[in-house]
Amino acid sequence: MLFRRRSTPSWFETARLWLWPRRSFARSTQYVLKRIKRVNASPRAIAMGVACGAFVSFTPLLGLHFLTAFALAWLFGGNLIAAALGTFVGNPITFPFIWAFTYRVGQVMLGSPVNVNEQPPIVELEKPSGLTIEGLGGFFEAAWPIMKPMLVGSVPLGLTAAAGMFVVTYWTVVGYSSARRARFKTKRRLPRDSMAAAEAGEDR
Image (tube, rainbow, N blue to C red; front, side, top):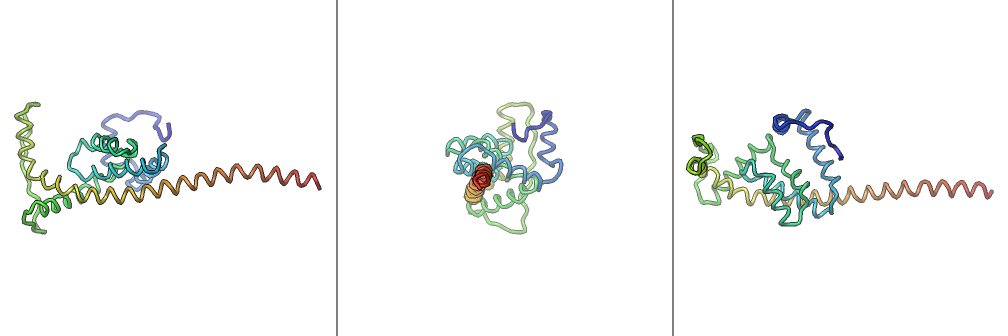
């Protein structure tokens, strides 16, 4: 398979590389772009998948981004691999900005007073004792004052990012496919031109 590693990394190494890539985020971005270009699907399916991944990256549903991106991609006819790659929009560098903007926008949409110098409230979350419904209910109840404006604010910001990523990805894939077909035609034409030149020389 293309770009597959020789040895399968452990879950700990995968998490560490996601938080901080082995080389740099710039190289990781180039890698993601190459993978998007090589996805075997139509330009629209690839663009829709990336758009779904980008939209999900603006939601505070950490741990559910992949599953949510897959569900949206399936619903709107996007490519699942492209959807997974699209979630790269949300990464340790962009998340602080995404969370801050979604929280502020959500406050405005909910009609809450906003002070630009005010920091988001810090809610002390007690770790639920065991996997019980009561413990999880208390956890989400404490987190809801922050999650609610972030969820609301993620909708317009996520849709804007998704629209931009759809347009950019669509035309990037179309341009890449056109250039690739042109290269194949050139390679096929060269042997024919050489044979024609050789036959012309023999006729002389």
